[in-house]
Length: 198
Image (tube, rainbow, N blue to C red):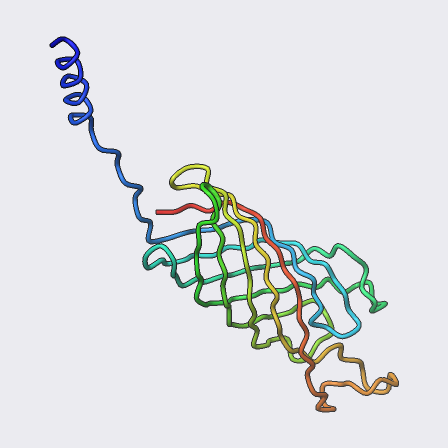
């Protein structure tokens, strides 16, 4: 009898225990962090630029979302092949596209995205300085809490600029009036920062 009573008591306590709360579903993600890009858009130029990268993602369910991504890069990490040392390159990018999420293991989530938009370059002798841009990227999130994560990501972005522009009579074929055709270039970029989900 005492053994049966003890078993019933244990069963009653377990049945009365509160159920574990489900993890809240987040509709939005905001990312901000350090950014780097290899500025291969300009012929005869190989800059490594640093800056900031921010994005906002609207999620529909666990696996699909739409991302709006913006970045500004300025500080060169290497000397350009162009000998004019007075040039200080900058790059702005605004991109938008779908993103797919997947849980890899416990606290680790991965994503794949396709981005389309435009890029603007400044501080270099280029014409024109605005281009359609697009590419693909991947990333990895490490969950710190239900709202905060650390993120590392990388993208391969293609764009097309006519550059550099040389003054008339300099012996180079490309000038603003020569009608030089643009050349597509692919530039890698990377970012690391914090994600807030709500």
